[in-house]
Amino acid sequence: MMVDFASNISRNTDNAGSLRVVAPDAAAEALLGEIARLIARPQVARDGENRVAIVLRLSRLTPPAPRPHHRRIARALMQDSAGWHGGQVFSLANGDLVLLCQQRFAGGKAGATPRRHVVGPEALPDMLRQLLRVDTPPGLDLVSVWPLASHGLALHDYARARVARQEGRLAMEEEFAGQTGVVDALGSFIGSAAIADLLQRQSAVQLGGGADGKGGLRPIYHEVTFSISGLEGRVASAVPVSTDPFLFRHLAARLDQRMLDILSREAGQGGPLDVTRPDAPALHINLTIQGILSADFARLAAAVGAAPRGGSARLGVEISLLEAVADSAAFDRARAVLAEGGFAFVLDGVSHLTLLMTRPGLFDASLIKLDWSHRLAELPEVELAVVERGLREIGLARVVLHRAETEAALRWGMARGIKRFQGRHVDAMLGAARIVGCGFAAGCALRQCIERGGATNPIGRAGCQNVALLDAATPPGIEPSAPSRMAGAI
Image 1 (cartoon, helix red, strand yellow):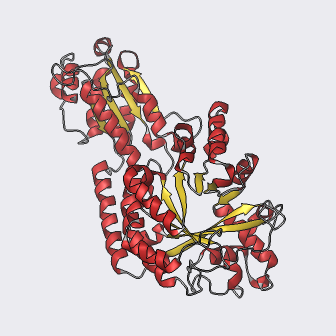
Image 2 (tube, rainbow, N blue to C red):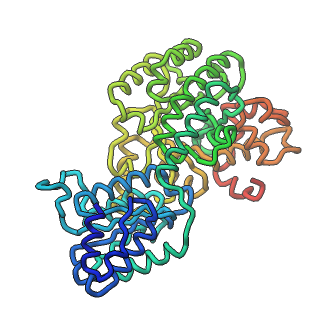
Image 3 (cartoon, rainbow, N blue to C red):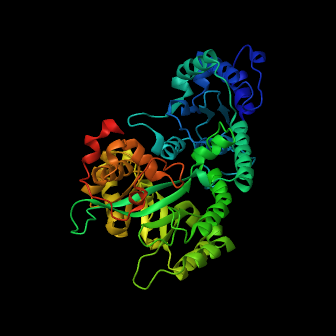
């Protein structure tokens, strides 16, 4: 692909022999630098009217971005465009991707015309921007488009800077292999080790959920999950699988059996993982579709029993949007299993971008968890109106603003009528409520109370003299602004 492109350039130079074409990703900086040096020559610039460089500067993103799946998708789009426009993609050591190609269709295959799904150079930049929109800081453009006839020097200067830096390389294929290796190691560990101590709990609350319907906050469920960072630590993983939703989904399927086994054993024991306790909020767990359809879930369902007529479900099952749309037939069967058992179905992993493009309210979930993003507070008015319309269609009583880590998240949600929240700021609010109302709080710090509230085992709760309050469905209420006055103690 780029061999032809490079050859066209070399034929217009008097030292074509100095240009050595190598395979993609092998000495990419050196090859790009050599091509850019040749392009910068006036004669080549005049001949480059139909050629363009598209640079995707992934190195500008703040970790944990760029996400591994973003890099793979971006590269696939660029490679496809290169194939049909006589070009090549360079994967640089700092993570940037550079496409050199012809601006107009070059007939990547003899006598062929481009397939409908091929993204041409004119549309590719905007598609790449959309792909990385969530992780791109405001005001930062990750994509540079340089027509070589007029901007050959810009590519030359960029390539020279990359050659000078000599960053260490982690090729995409090596990174992907490393991640799949970590998943295999985690899967082996999950299947054989005692991992109940890696469970963690986070509460969701309803603001204004007091008996009078006004002040205070009321826990509405405890979500129980495995600490993925804790699991990665056990296998000494330096690669965070949780940043890749596809690898994480594969890992989640392996975690289902252990979660269901632990909850089945804890049912009726009166502990923080007892899903049958009437004096505590419902427990929510995250499951894959196959996990819901498994015999392990059937055993848990039998241990829990159906919700009493007119009562609320003691168990809620959270299904990610990605999981729900992957296999619609299997999803329908899983929904039927949950409905038959009287369990709540919660749609998880809904972003504001989802609301801009789809109608998640049509899933008819008991609750829908909207992931908070600072982008929500920065949306243009047109897009904000679409998001608000989507929330109204869902019904605000069914919306939980998830990952509410700051007071700004709560203020944004409350301004739009949302009253259900989950996140670290909520944890702080609940901890403050317990500290205010507990007779044994004199020797406890707020951070200690927050950490004990998130623990599911005796070790994590050690030192608490009022364990019942950690699980209470109606702890003492406080005003939503209280944690901001205690920020220094957190």
